[in-house]
Length: 512
Image (cartoon, rainbow, N blue to C red; front, side, top):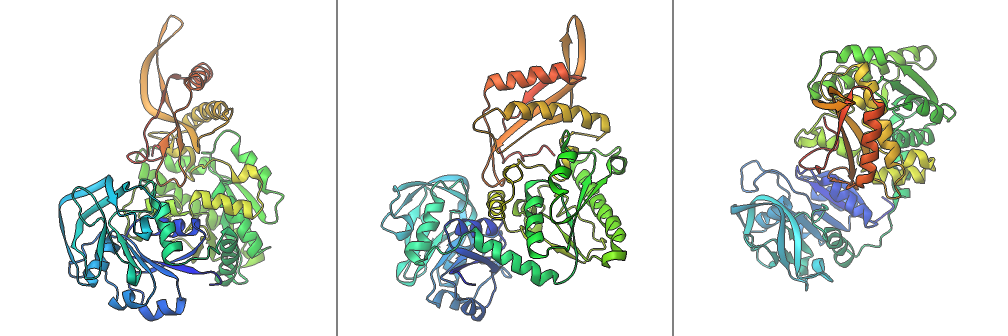
C-alpha cells in the first residue's frame, strides 16, 4: 500500500472492523488479516504496527487460535486486545486462568499514566470489559499498567519491545478515552505519520472493483438509501456504462419514497430500472408474523426480482454474473457473519438465498460504518440530500409493522411515519434515525362520547455514530405532543401513541 499500514489480526471477535475503523479515524491505513497469518507474509506487508483482536475462545484450550511466537520478535509494535492480550501473555510465558469473578460492561480502572498508552489521561478511567479469563502473571519483562477491583492486570506492557496489551476494549464507545489510547499507540509507539484519509479508500475501492469485475456488467440493488447510493456512485466511477441499477419498489417504502428515488437517479450516468413489485412482495408475506422469516422472504424475493431483470438484459449484455449491494459492516455483524452471533438477518446478508444465479457479490462498502459511508459519499460529490438521508432498512415497513404485513397496515404506518418525520425535521439538532412503528397492540380510548379500541403507534428516535450501539433521543415533549395529536386525528384507526426510550443494547434500532 502507498500509506503506512497497521494490520489487525483477527482471532474471532466481533470488533475487528471497529478496530480497523478506529485506526483509520486516527489517520492511519488499516488492513484485517487472519490471526494465523504467517510472519513471512506480515514482513512483506511491512506494517508499522500490529493489533490482535478479541475472540470467544480460551487461549489455554487445545485448538484455540494461535499465532507464531516470532510475531512478537519482529521489532514491530504490537497491541493485544482482550483475547489478544491473553494470547500475547500465553505465547510469551505468562499465565492465563479463568477469572474468579468475570467482568462484563463498563468497569472502573486505575491506569499508570507514565505509560505511553495512557499519557495525558487521568489515573481513573472507564473501560468496557467482557471476559471470563484473565492474565494472572504477565510474561517476563512485562509490567501491569492498569487494574480493576478484580483484575490486577487490566493492561500490561514491555515498553522496550513495543508490546502493549489491554484486557478492556479501547475500540468501543463505552471506553470513553479508548480512541485516545489507540491514538497514543499509533503515534507515540508506532510513530505513525497520519498519511491516510477517505480519499485513499475511494482510490483503493475503484481499483479493487475494476480488478474484480473486469469488463463484465454488474446489476446493482438500489434502494435509494445512503449505502446503495454511495455504492452506485462508486460503481459508476469504476466501471462506467456497465452498471444496471435496479430499484425494487416492494410496496414497503415510506410515503412518496418510490417517486423520490426515481427522480433522484433516473438522470444519472447509469442504467436505472424501476420495478413495481408491491403485489409480489405482499403476497409472499401474507400470514407471516415472525421477523426473521419476514427478512428472509424479502431477501429471497429481492434476488428473484434481480434475476428476472438480469434475464431481460441478457440479449444486449449477456449473462450478468455480478450482483452489487450497499452492504455495510453493521449489517454483516448483526447477520452473524464471521462467526459472530446472529442478531437479525439483514436481507442483503443472512437473507440471501443459496441458489441465486449470480456468481459473485460486489460489496465495496462492506468494511465501512455509516459515518464513513457518508464521508465517502461527500468525497464522491453526491448531493447532500442523499448523503445525509437517514437510514431506511431494505425490508422497509415490513419490520416496522409488527405482526402480519398488509397493504392496509402499511398505508396506515406511512401516514403516521410521515407526520412524525415532518415534526422532527423542524429540529435544529436532529436524531440520526427517527421513524414510526405500527405495533400489534390495541388499546381502549375515547373519541367524542364513544369508546374506541384502536391501534397503537410507537415513535422512535436515536442518536449514534456507528449503529452498532445507540441511545434514545430525548425529544421535546411539545414535539411529541404535536406528533401524537396529529397522528391520532389524521390516521384512521389509531387511538394511542407511545415513545420508545430504549437504547441498543438491549434493544435494536428497528423493532424487528
